[in-house]
Image (cartoon, rainbow, N blue to C red; front, side, top):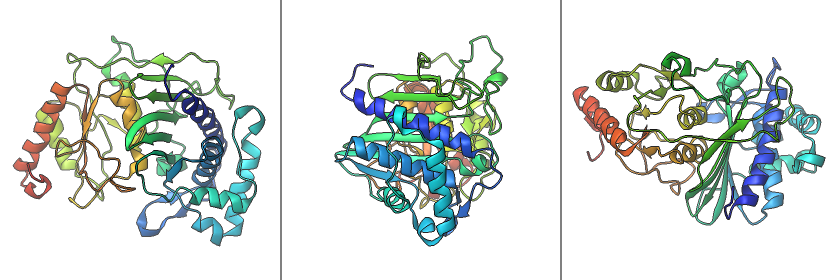
Length: 371
């Protein structure tokens, strides 16, 4: 790919490949060292900590003037020496630096400092954004998860690298039954290859196998496949997450699906990054997410970069108000409310109208903002 960001893409691909190896090494463990975050924000595992340390240490070594934003902090490791040692040992035994181009932290203390280097807020200039494991709850169940890395330049998605170690990289053929395209949390690639997706703004989105097969050998020589743009003639196929009542409104999502005449819940995936990957790969082509309250907002690491994959296939992404997603808002995307994504401008307008119609019909006028 010939772009001004070729080196950044090459470095990010190498590091994410190794991060995926690390995640697969941890995946079979019954005890993944999971601890609950404060404020009921879900679990974090030794895989999350180790991958964020690996990503930050390696990319900081390559691009020392860049800033970093990541989901995790090292407070649990600093207060629990046993957990810290488990994360440190995991890094040492699973990541080979001689051929991978990765740079490991120099010590457990340096590892914690690397994790905490990601506590910035996004701003102008160059900022890397990480979600070390998106879908930690499903990762604990050995189900679908993803690793998300994005480079933002002046708040614009510029590079996306996403690893989905359990998702098949194979295309869905046009004559395949639509049901075969549906991805769920337990859709595990039987070949063990997984998917590595990447994009540079203005240069398209691509996918290739992540591993050579049912081992952890990285498929570095696999040829990437450019992801095809959606067309207006394709029927809408949703991806969502059903029955997350503490977060979003299933009855609204169901109502939108009924108005559009599409399956519900369609592809059912917990993690947002696998949802964006499935949209880019054509395994689904539309998503709607309406939070329960206007003061609920998305987190940048669940979306930055991963959205670029879909955008580079021609997909349109806005919030429920029809506004572009503002990635300069901060770690929490408080300038936007929810998401509406569809494959073309025409289909996006149709889906957005359905969302507004259903909110009005269900008496949820407080969620409509200024519409």
